[in-house]
Length: 187
Ligand SMILES: [Zn+2]
Image 1: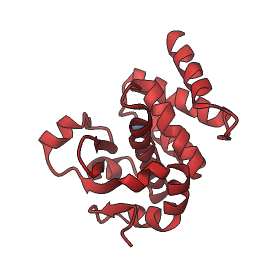
Image 2: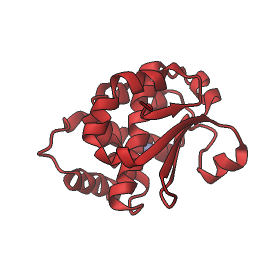
Image 3: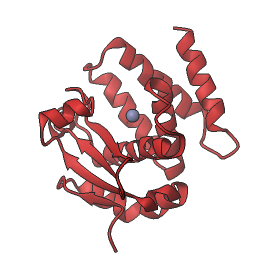
Image 4: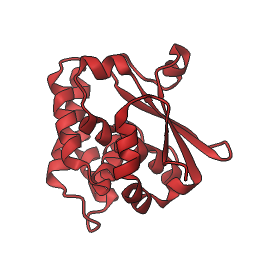
């Protein structure tokens, strides 16, 4: 059977994700059954520009939801992965986060942007079971010193929400978004 993610990166983490998290991801996000996902490297700069992948982003996604079948890409920037010492565990969390973005768009359209979109993506990470790994990754991103103040601020808010909201079904996405938006207002 075809794996959840077609790994074109030669990065072990995608194979591990397929092996250890595919079942969980499909149960959390049944919509994935109708979407093919390729993991690819930063193969051309025009494509990266289209993805809005900046030089300090290790991961990005693109979702061709208008095509049939729907196809998504998780794009990795191997230079940044090396530079920021991003581990296999970090990458597993990032994969779940990018899948979260893809599923958010599939379910809600692309109406969420910026911090709320990140918070929504993080919710899927928690539900897939990679919350602790994501917190470590976000802290590493803050520590690397490569991000603007507003980006660090977003990372801190995401950690705040991740740590305070063990992801159970009784806490709605809506409630978390309200908090994120409220925190945003209080800048
Ligand atoms: Zn994101």
